[in-house]
Length: 126
Image (cartoon, rainbow, N blue to C red; front, side):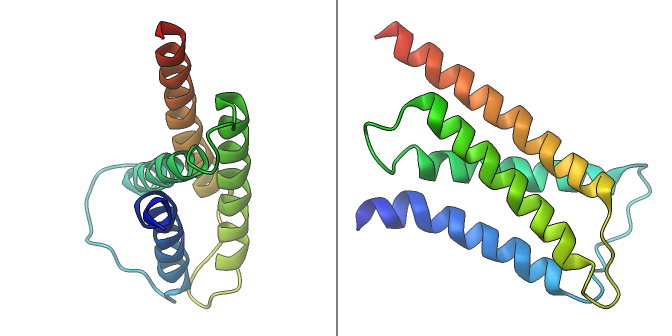
């Protein structure tokens, strides 16, 4: 039960938060006059999700190989990002944007490759 609270619930709660924010008909974040800030937000939002998902998947079983953890995490976040953008297309006042999904995937991919590399390098040191 401690593993669920420590590793799995944070990933699930963050995913639910993303869906809640996607459900808001008109999300009005503070206006910042920086070009591309929306894409940076998508990048960071999904980088955080990727860390939490990787952390969760890596604690499912001690026998789960790092490569499989990486692939499962990547697949989960990709599918989640696609479904989130698809879902937003049905919310009045929201729209689906392929570039948002691109930055979701980019943010998650970069952080997952980093985590995989770091974990693999750490296991080779032992």
